[in-house]
Image 1: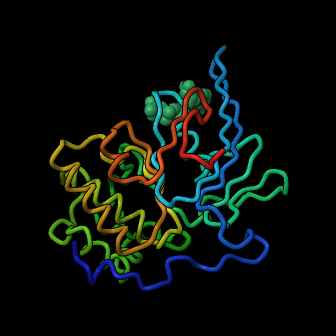
Image 2: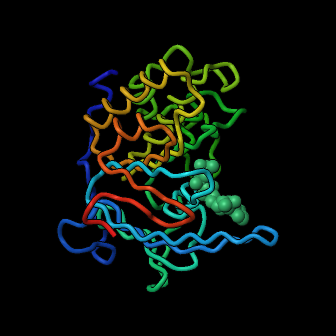
Length: 253
Ligand SMILES: Nc1ncnc2c1ncn2[C@@H]1O[C@H](COP(=O)(O)OP(=O)(O)OP(=O)(O)O)[C@@H](O)[C@H]1O
């Protein structure tokens, strides 16, 4: 990991507007999320109530427990029927107050299970994509200095002009992480980012994520089915089952 490339050029936490700020020392994660989903004659009810001081959370639980739904509601990619989302005191959604920031204004970086890179854009253009303004050609934002910083940090220099189908799974994963970080997000939401990787690559990328967090204080929510991921990358493990939190560190609801 290139240290100079990772040195933060900003304070780790940015001041939030007064109206959206909670009391001093707010928890990192303050989540109340209710959502009912219907598929045919089946209904799934998500009812998450969680307050967590620790910055790095692993969200675990069986398939269908509601982990990805939780992440989508935090990200603003879906809307809860009722609830509130605040990260480090910055309120992103509050149903009772009729307040909801659009996804693009939430200042969050995500990496999905399949990395969701744009197949028609090069590595450099994929990383720069989040910096674009309006419908500018992605080539313009790809030349931004921030893109160079993350290209170096994740050792992508040799493949910046390649397309996703021309690079390995690990390189795709690095590109997705770089793309999530290029906007200097307030938090990272990672949905099984290492699931498609073999063991040595998984270990190498865990190490890179740890190095990154040592340099840039960005809270992470990591969805994982892997106990080692949870043990190494999280300082709080929260277990979901059938849409509810069934186990979490002491002191949280
Ligand atoms: N668009 C949708 N419409 C209806 N039900 C949905 C929809 N998306 C998800 N669900 C249901 O919501 C539940 C939770 O799904 P979710 O994807 O959050 O699970 P998960 O814990 O992330 O599972 P996995 O570990 O398999 O990824 C599942 O029962 C799923 O069938």
